[in-house]
Length: 299
Image (cartoon, rainbow, N blue to C red):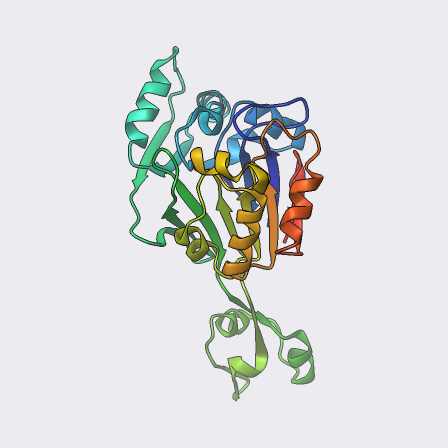
């Protein structure tokens, strides 16, 4: 699993920061969290194939989170005429996308499926045998969602056990991984002895919201929490007016949710140096880092 942060600014891009977007690559599949202006260019700089973005998760329809969508869809269609893109977003997403594709001559003849999510609490909206995607409603000035990517636990075969018991390769190993006992050369092999459990990773994405219990529930026990940190707490009144979080709020969220690591992002353009934001968060949640554009994280 690789995560590439494509943008870390809030509404206004700066020379150093593009607005919000994160690309998650998992087993060859690309999942894009938001699609700000400049997302395509950031993907190109990062060496990402833009037509890999076949699932796009839209937190909300403010321009700084979706302004790069139409260009990306046209590029995907240009590179693969048979492409199918799944877009997941809050209530109203179908209507908003209709307007977006009518703002210019949109000739990408690809299949675009828009799924409007209206969760009551934390809900799973997509699932495979390897992972699931969850969402929750956040508290912003318009309908807004937080998202989580949850890798499922899996079993790996214990190579040492296989060698010790002289168990050869074969289809029986896959059955062991599936949690099934097998017979090998007349001997019963118990999966609990021949395999070990690998805990799946959880990534939570929370942006453009005031501090809310829903965000805590979504981020519960996440390995990584990407959270907005638009202001320092000395501007808490401004954060509350615009329904955003301060660095202090993000740290409290991480602490309450019991996450392993907090990554701050979505910084106001007023901050040329975000050291004070990070320092503020670390007084509450020490394992905090600041995101930067094109930052790569491997799990």
